[in-house]
Length: 219
Image 1 (cartoon, rainbow, N blue to C red):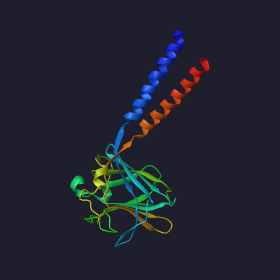
Image 2 (image 1 turned 180 degrees about the vertical axis):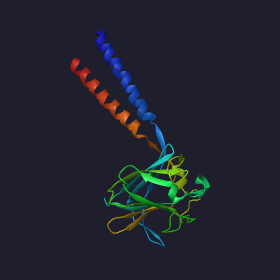
Image 3 (image 1 turned 30 degrees about the horizontal axis):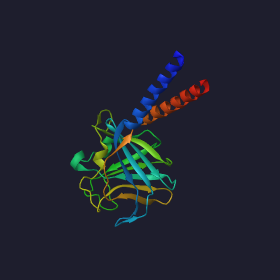
Image 4 (image 1 turned 120 degrees about the vertical axis):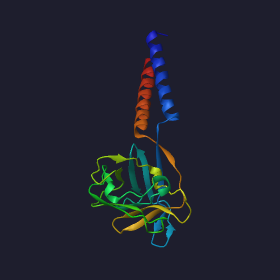
């Protein structure tokens, strides 16, 4: 076997090791994914299967939020419940800012409704237009209304720790009929692979496939 062939094999082996490591231990970002499993009214949450998801992923002091609706409708409003046990006092609406993604102009209201009873939520984000599906944006919490200095905002602040079947965690009102969909019951923290890790994995797999193809041609 020629020295160049040995080098190629060694390179392929090293590359495959990196790919395996990326699969086995991907970088993780703390996050929560809520399943929109019921249709919401002021008095009840009627089970309706999986209508979509609301995903919150920690990003430094901020939270990246993605709302996906299975029927393809656009989001009219996103409502979230705040857990004062882990997050402390509910932030003022003026100190919150939703930006980036495809949310565009929007308004935020914040009212402490306590227990997360049906139809009443603590924080509401309302896009002014029709942002499309999925809706993506970043939510920030700041020391004041000038939005200059950010305060840590964690996905767990929206995961009610005293969870029971009386709690609805999040609600999405969808266009065009303003039907309310909600995540009902308990949920748990999950780890979500970071996008950069998934990208590196893809590059590694492509590189490995190309290297194997070249070695086969040489043999």
